[in-house]
Length: 282
Image (cartoon, rainbow, N blue to C red; front, side, top):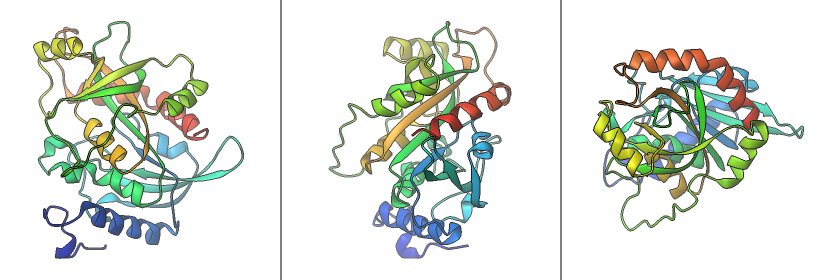
């Protein structure tokens, strides 16, 4: 295991987080034997099965061994990082980095920890980032298990991964090109706006109504801060949400993490195949 020196303490304000990302990328290159990766995946609730069917696993190791990463804090969130050789539809091979152990904002470890995975992906050579999550939905025409492409987001956490006078244009945060690619795989995929709340509590019915008034179709506790960080380091982003339940006040049942896990497990094989097919044509 590679330990961070005091000069590379991600939680030290004097440390450049990209230096820690570079140390993490160097660890990944050494451990996997792959000098550079092309695509990175962050697999949220329900999406983990995609890593099993993407292609040939070149290396696999606990994510917390990588500099700057922590063990997963939530049941159902994977803690393994894999390097996978994926044969694309055109016959070429891409190296895909599947990053486990996503750090959520509600864990209280700071936005640098939340952003570290995507910054590491960029430092490892990736040009494309695929962010996935499980979330609540506001559109009653969508049923639990529906996959939605993200076309925009609302960051309702009050936090950002950007530091200092770093001005980043988010007009086209979620790539139209990548959404078009996803639609070649499944033309029926709807698009929506994702709103990240701080968590870890679920949203109240009033907050869900507010989200709808503000233009959100989906609500959850991840993704938005990561997407901002990813754009800050120049990654092209594809976002996919698995709607595991309707939001509070829309469905009559109480919300629970068990419900999220159950919906993710039920949809798992189908959405894993969808994601794998999309990655093969990116």
